[in-house]
Amino acid sequence: MVATFPIVIEDMTLDDIDGVQEVERASFPVPWPANAFRHELTQNKNARYLVAREGGRIVGYAGLWLMVDEAHITTFAVHPDSRRQRIGERLLVRVFEMAAALNAEWLTLEVRASNLAAQKLYEKYGFRRAGVRRRYYSDNNEDALIMWTERLRERPVRERLAKLKAELQETG
Image (cartoon, rainbow, N blue to C red):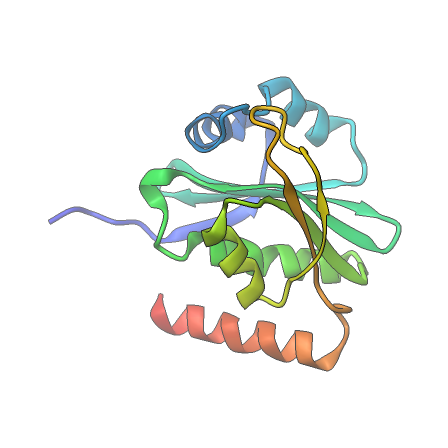
């Protein structure tokens, strides 16, 4: 039997950067360098980052920038070995909660046009396609879909999040 640990989601610290880099390199063809995360954590007052930890290992992370009343998800990944365990959903719920705590009106993000699994997750949580950034990704010039939520304070958004969060808690 393989021992498993509960997933803990908490604020990213400088000590987490090496673990985040492991997830980054396993997830993206052009990973952010460590110094980009260091800068985000120490210099960007509009940035907030989370990590998902299983035992001592970082298995996912998410970041956002608060820009006036918009929370823009800047990066989001779960290690390929840890996908399909609802870690991404747990991170996304925390991103919604963090955005609401920062008084953001909306959440927005870009996602690769080919990343259907991520799009499905975002749509489940109420994101809708709002446009396309042509040739957005530098590694292969792939388009990015721009996605937005409805206003975070609106009742249907809050109710959807509460329902999905309860379902997550039921399944562990």
